[in-house]
Amino acid sequence: MKFTTQLRQENNSVWQQIFDCPFITGLTDGTLAPEAFRYYFIQDNKYCVAFYDLHQKIAAKMTNRAHADSLAHLVDVCNEISEHSPIYDELNLTQTEIDSVPVAPTAYAYITNMNYQFEQQGIDAGEASLVPCYWTYTEMFRKIAEKGFNTKPVYKDFIDFCASEEFGSVNQQMLNLTDDLAENTDDKGREKMRLAFQYSSEYELQYWNMCVIHEQWLLDQEQEKVARPLR
Image (cartoon, rainbow, N blue to C red; front, top):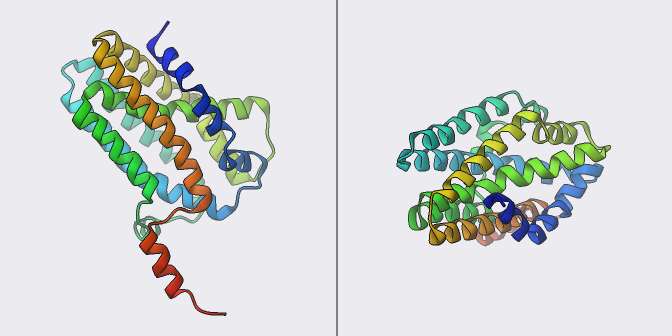
């Protein structure tokens, strides 16, 4: 059995919670609040900057040049795919607006953990921490697309993007790399990869839930209440 297959089985309960979470069900049936969708894209932009930067950091430390080139190449592919997405224009979302919003607590914790896995647990664990982001999106949105859905046009564009063959190809490259790394490390290394994969899977669930509640830092919430005019 492939190492990635084992990881998928071990984390099935968490992944099912992701697939059934309010953000995804609301996205699929059109009941998701537009504010939650906009919040997601603002935070996703911040997450992706750190996410792709970590790809480059890990690739730079890899001694296997084929692995390094594969990981670094994924960043270029993902950026190229994203450039063809119409969603930022549909939301009238500008970089100025994105920059004006702080990274949310859960997004910050997720990013910090991935960097911890790389810096403290090693290259293989760092790479494994990246995988759930690709894989949960690919599996989840492909299933939604295959089943069929009726939702708002902008939500449909997002689902179609994540269910695309292009995105799925990137995910498969990531899985192949993960299996190669697992095959070339020892039991201790594979255990570190398992934990890194598990933690990122759980952060994926927390991330979606964060977007539904528009999570903020406590001090930002307090300041917002003070600034809000009385009715």
